Length: 279
Ligand SMILES: NC(=O)c1ccc[n+]([C@@H]2O[C@H](COP(=O)([O-])OP(=O)(O)OC[C@H]3O[C@@H](n4cnc5c(N)ncnc54)[C@H](O)[C@@H]3O)[C@@H](O)[C@H]2O)c1
Image (cartoon, rainbow, N blue to C red; front, side, top):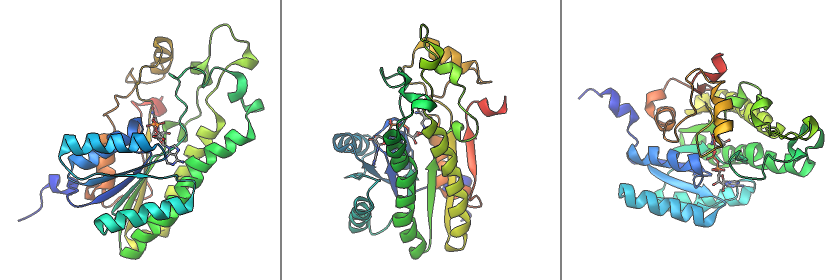
């Protein structure tokens, strides 16, 4: 029988590694995989978070889910992850590079001091952010992507940000009562890392095009997660659709990009941000 369009979204039997899968969006990527019949592998440095996320998914979808404690800044840790996945499932089809340092506006203390300002930005924070957000992705692609290429195919999805496409509007992070040179800002590393991921996406898309490994990126806008009313107001003023994203709102795009539904797409960057970059 001829395949129907919904068949292109089917992930039955496909194994997907999600780095940072215990986090806010990583769990949603794992749900998207599970809902399409795939097997999510949650690879996260947070051991209790990875175990909990896996238990929740197994229970909710009645399927196998593997949680593997992984530090993506260490090549050996990624090699162990791959070995464990291959032992369990004999295959890996999808890699979602999602883990990153993502300082939350809603968490107190993170962007409340002057440390985030470019002039004062500490070298060790720069290096720590780079290690996870860029070097970690490079290592995951090198270890897991190379295995896919050797096996004859696979899909890589890099999670970037609308801040890969536009500069942060630092006015939205301002706190009343602080001097200008003490105002918190979105860290420089965030822009550099997310822009770098788009370059890595294009590089690998062409590098592995003849190996049947497709590599794409998604650039999501900010997710509502209990941020202050003032911050939400300032941010949504910059968004034509007038709101932040719901946490579930990227699942459809993630499924599109990791499934056969996007079979003719590689090196692309799907921008989903309520129109923010269009203004
Ligand atoms: N939340 C948003 O509004 C938003 C918007 C656009 C893009 N993004 C991007 O989406 C991705 C997920 O964001 P989030 O909000 O879910 O972040 P999060 O902080 O909730 O989750 C990140 C996860 O990565 C894990 N992690 C950190 N270092 C690691 C390491 N060395 N090895 C393995 N895992 C590690 C953490 O333990 C955590 O579970 C990030 O790349 C972020 O930049 C988020």
